[in-house]
Structure formats: structure tokens, C-alpha cells
Image 1 (tube, protein in one colour):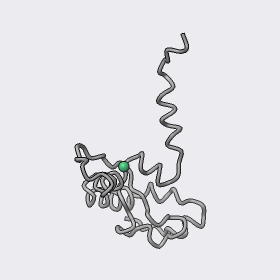
Image 2 (spheres, rainbow, N blue to C red):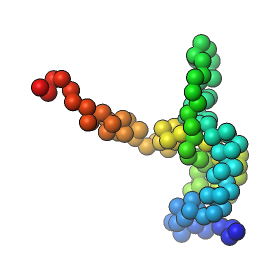
Image 3 (cartoon, protein in one colour):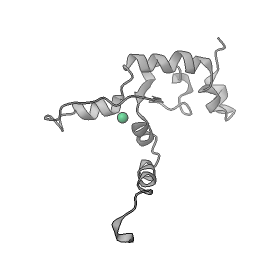
Image 4 (spheres, rainbow, N blue to C red):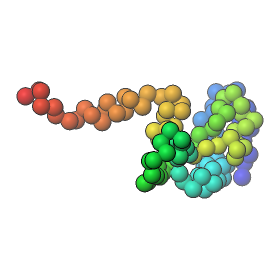
Length: 118
Ligand SMILES: [Zn+2]
């Protein structure tokens, strides 16, 4: 399997190529998901926090993405370290990445017909 030099990819502005390499797709990503039992580590953490001592965990959020704790751009040397990877659900990943999750929620609301319109 070809080993990619992540720093070179980042410097060339081709960071995303790393995510399509077999190294990531068949090694690192599945290893992180298996280690985390395919559960979102952020949701689990929230549920277990002392803030909600009476809340029982009913379902676990399935993790679909693997996040780099230390970003690939700033820390390419950690891009392949399992300790730097954490399994997250889409929602948590968006929140962690600072993407606008609320826009997605708004989008989902759109098709609803509200009574006031009629
Ligand atoms: Zn989550």
C-alpha cells in the first residue's frame, strides 16, 4: 500500500486526497471506528456527563465520520495516529468543525406547511 506524505499533500493544497487513499479508507478510518465501537464519542460523552445523572442512555448514536482532533492542516504529522482520531456522528462532526448545523435543521423544516399560511 502506498504511504502518503500528508505534509506534502497539505503543502500542495491537496489535503483531501489523503481521505481517498486506501491508507485512510481501509486502515485508519475503520480502525478508529472499530476501536470506538461505531459509536459517536461526543454524544456518548454528553449522555454520561454529570449534568444529566438521571438520563438513561437508550440508543447510541452511530458514528459515521472519523475526526482528526489535531487538524490535518496544522498537524500533518499526527494525521495517521490512532490517538488523534475520534469517531463522530454527522451532527457532532459538523458542530466540532464549526459548520452550520442549524441550516440543515432549517432545511428539514421547510417542506412543512404551517397553519398560519392558510
Ligand atoms: Zn454525536
